[in-house]
Image 1 (cartoon, helix red, strand yellow):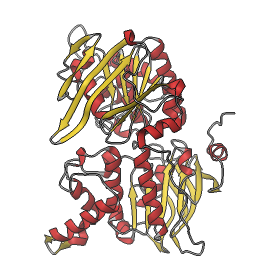
Image 2 (cartoon, rainbow, N blue to C red; image 1 turned 90 degrees about the vertical axis):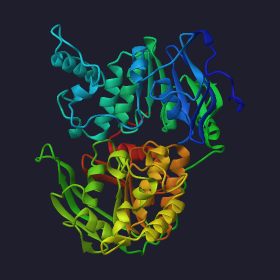
Image 3 (tube, rainbow, N blue to C red; image 1 turned 120 degrees about the vertical axis):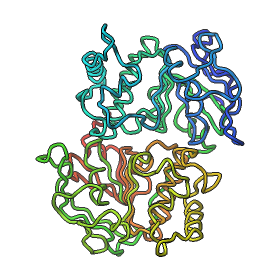
Image 4 (cartoon, rainbow, N blue to C red; image 1 turned 180 degrees about the vertical axis):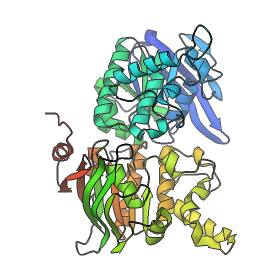
Length: 517
C-alpha cells in the first residue's frame, strides 16, 4: 500500500510524458477551480483521475483538450509549451475528448454526428457520405454495437448515444484520448467491450486519461491513479500500489458506504401499485419492452430495480410517471387509478420522476438554480395571473437547504454546478412537489461517491418520513445499500425479488449477467 502523502508526478517514466499541465490555475470570478495543478500523461498508459464532483477534474480536462484556457500556468506537449485556441487546435495535435455530458445533435444521423465539423470530401469537393458511413460502421463494429450509421441519434437509447460519442472520439485517431465518464450509460457488456478497445489503443501507444465515478471499474483499467481534491492534486500512485479503500480515503477523507435500509412498517399502506403493466417497443410494436409487470410499494419502503441495459427498468418507471403510454395494465396511486392521467396530473396526485438523463429531461440549462428547483411546483405559488415571488423564494431556499445543494445562490446558473449538485437540484425539484411516491432512474449516474452517499442518505431520510421510493440502477453494489427490497428485471419482466440480505452473485444471476468465478 502506498503512502497517503502526495507525490510530485503521475509517472515514474518521465521521459515518456507526452502531455503535461504545469502549475495550472483556473478561476471563474472569485472561485479557483484549479490551484496550481501539475499533471502528466504518459505514452501508452491509462491515467485515471479520481475526485468528487466539483474537485476540478472536468475543468482540467477541458483545458488539456482546448475547450478552455488556463488562467495561468502552461500546457506542454512533447516537451514544448503549446496554446490551444480551440478543440479543433487540440484535435489537430492529436488530442480528443469524450465529454461527461453528451454533445450530440439528436436531429442528425449517427454518421453525421461522428464526422460533424470534419466532413470527408470527394475529389470534387462534395461530402463523401458513403465513405463516412463506411468508417462509422467499421468503428461501431469494433465496439460490437449494431447501429445503422443512418439512424437518427434521437432514436437511440441513452447507452447507444454514449457509444456514438465514443465512436466519434475514436474516429479522430487521436494519440491522446480523454474519457470523461465514458461508461456512465453503458451496460456491463458494453463496458467490457470498451475496455478491450482501450487495451488495444494503449498497445498501439495511445495515451488514455480516464475519469469515472465507478471506482471499482476504473481500478480494472488504470495504470496510474491521480486524486484531485478541491482543485489540487492530493495523491498519486501506480495501480499496483492501491485499492478501492485508498481511492475513497483520498477522495473523501474516510472510508465510505452508501448507508443501510431505514426502519419501516410492514403494515404501512400500499402507496404505488402496478398491475399487469405492459409497454410496447416504440420501434417494434409487436415487442414488449415491459411485459406484464406487477409491483407494490408501501409508504416508507425503498425498492431497488436492478437489471442490465434494455431490461425494461427505464421504460417501467417512465410508464408509471406518464412519460410513455401503457399498452395494458393499470397504475394505482394510493388506491386511485392514474393510468390515463397526464404527467402534471400525476405530480398533483403525489407521483414524481427523476429521469435518467438530467441534462436533457431534468433541467432547463438556460434557467437559474432556483427556477429549476421551482419549475415543477409553479402552480403552488401562482395567484390568478400573478406569481408570488416571496412564496417561490421561500420554497427554493427551503429545497436547496433540504437537499444540500452547494451553490453560490439560487440565482446562479445551473451550468455552474457540478454534476452531483445538478442531480440534487433535480431531486429537490421533485421533492418540492411533496410527493407520496418518488421514482428515480439511475440517480447516481455521473456523480461521485461522496455525492452518491448524500443522495442515498437523503432518500433514506425521506423514506423514514413515509415517502415511497423506487430507484433503478445498473450497479449491483447500489442494490445492497438503502433498499429494503431488490426487484430484478430481465427482458421486460420481473425475474426475481430479494430482501436486503441477498448477495451480489444472486442478483447478477437473476439478471442474466455472467458472474465471475
